[in-house]
Length: 322
Image (cartoon, rainbow, N blue to C red; front, side, top):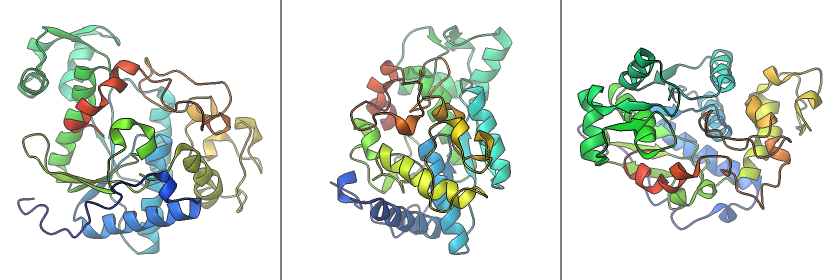
């Protein structure tokens, strides 16, 4: 990767100053997503897709699979960040669809923190002794985050917890797998800290992260467009027996042709009313109705997520978070 990014020919300004409104129809959005995905798969020597099992990264994965099949390209490996605080249903969803779609999924974890948690029988919210962690984690805590306390809580949605449980293993995976481009499901409208992202976003400072680019094919989608794309394209294209022209179910019992929730590449948590999936201990459902039937236009998508981490998003992204 010593020449990075000299072998690439991508426009890092693509999408600059734009918003979802610049792609007024779902077809416009899909065409741009296909264009970005194709360029990403062709330009990068060793891309990978960041897959959380959530709606956005699964939609990005769908475009990767479709473009790869259409243009005889390889589907890159998926990286799943296991932060030890996932909903059980989400882990089961990822494993199930990884097998269904024949995906190479690399599970990235902060094994040092995980070992400490197991050894001491911790549950989320319990304190972790910084002095007992390895050199890499202590370096990040003291020198990068400049955190001065002797302990930090075992919680994902905090400054130290998020960085150690997600950013550190992500950067380790990028380095270990020699990844030059991470395909992610980041969207402009999801959060203010992501509003200035471009379709090809450089991360080239070796002092912060292994140099790589972020490839963001659904950057211009809004939440409504994500669900419209699922029910009219993703599900009909990937589920045998689903109506070709699409069908939007009222709930998990309203799926057509005898299909069940297990047949659909949509996390059960969205059927249950969650709109954004974070950690099990700090994410709550928005309503009881499925996510796509909620008032997406007039309510906040991430309202069910812990707000202390949301308020720190800009700082976390500077350190390599998605």
